[in-house]
Length: 576
Image (cartoon, rainbow, N blue to C red; front, side, top):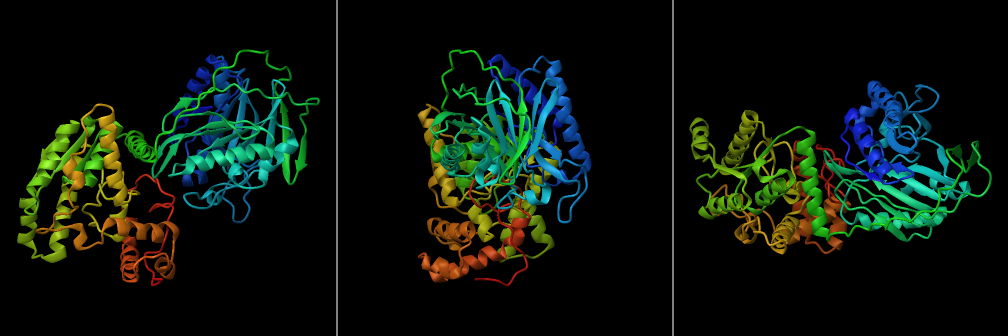
């Protein structure tokens, strides 16, 4: 199982990735190598699926890859890949279906040709997925006899939904069910995956191999976590999370009884298509030990997801470096640390932009972070720039506060244009929820690493990262004062976040119920939240929708993030 990190739209690069890992699999003695869902195109392709040229290029790349593998001496190794295909029978379009009938497809490549092509049956249309918009469903369960063992193949959501092709696996008599996945990370999902795989294996009466992609793609981050369970649901092997790996697993599988069959049969509306590659069983050999990668703790997994997402956004969008504002506070400190871990401190540029209201300790804490991590740091006071604006236009109150933030945002964007850096915004999910950020100011940038991280979780991650450094005998990267001091935007004398917001422990709990689970006012009050605070927070969240629409993308780590997960109208009078 090749747990790899493809790039959306890079068909040539992704095919090269397949060839390289197929060679590694062959050298390891594998009899079958499987890649993730839509590995040839990357995933998700979104509306690229509706471009005929892209679908055609994907299909051509799949067939060319079969020939390339054979030419490279890998033709005898069955290679299973996900790609963007098209419904059999041409390009006619049914009313309400995507033009050109694109499909989330799978193919088995062997000896220079595609032995079968099939397509995903269940198309998810919830959360971050819009597959009804992009694909038409398949209705075939391919079953291949390989070395006397019948093996069935399905794609991702086909495993998650009851019925469909998985329900026909037991009837097919397959001894192994292989599932190709593009399953994004969110907290607490790994145990759910294992439980699901175990249940489906028992239902199918077959061992189950679940291969998932890894890597960042805009808001999504894929964590890998590929695994194998036996027919009883017991875990046999598991890949590490958040890193590319080739998981080689030897399975003791029963030969399929009966003569080979290459026909088709229908079971419960599912067409079972059978294909014969080889009838002769593999000679006995000494199996390799089955690797089971240990899982890190919850905070470690969240942090790894943020680092991987940031690294891939920078790399896949061809940025050589990043720049961010350093205030000495916890948010910018955590973002700088994530960036340094993702791409190396030498490629991270922090800008200290003190104003007349900046405290001495803020500058000192930011300078200490630069020293500890070895990132590039510079000080550019914004006072003269703010004063120039104030001489042109008289401002006070909130307008004066926002002016400072906008000058800082403009300065960072100017450095980005001049020096080629990607600007990282440092706002957290609590600020984004309540609108506690300045449009075109601290919200200006290209990527937002902690966009889906509540403020309370920001502190937890900072403490975790420092503790991890101490465990390794390293200097903690985040100054203690940045973690312990009361948070403040420092846009007016003596300002604290608690001047405008409740304590974050109280606020985040309420926000998580309102944003994360869509509880209404009465339900929030019944859950124990203060009624007056509920009214105030609902008002803040709803009024800030226009700001969130203009915020940069950032990695999804929760069950419901701002972005693909949560889509609400900006103009709305519904408040309960």
